[in-house]
Amino acid sequence: MVVEDGELVEFAASEAEISTQEKRFFFAELRYIASDRGYRQGWAAMKHKEKFGSFPPWDWNDDITATPTVTTLRWVKSRQIAYAKARAAS
Image 1: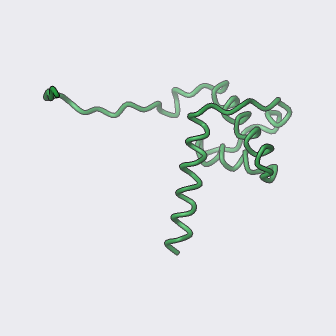
Image 2: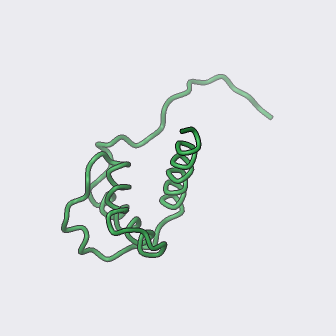
């Protein structure tokens, strides 16, 4: 095993770097998850707001749904775990 000194830097996409198309696709994935799992209609919009800080535009509800990627499924699972831990703590 080789260990080298280096500089640790944050590597994450900022809010400004995420395009409207990527947000729209993420919302379509959330709508697929909601319909697949029998969640209420507003669940996808609430999760979109949780991630991006604002609700998606109303006209995005007319879009077709998209099969979620592994990244989106993992994000949803992380939110479910955080919710369960918060409920257990209170």
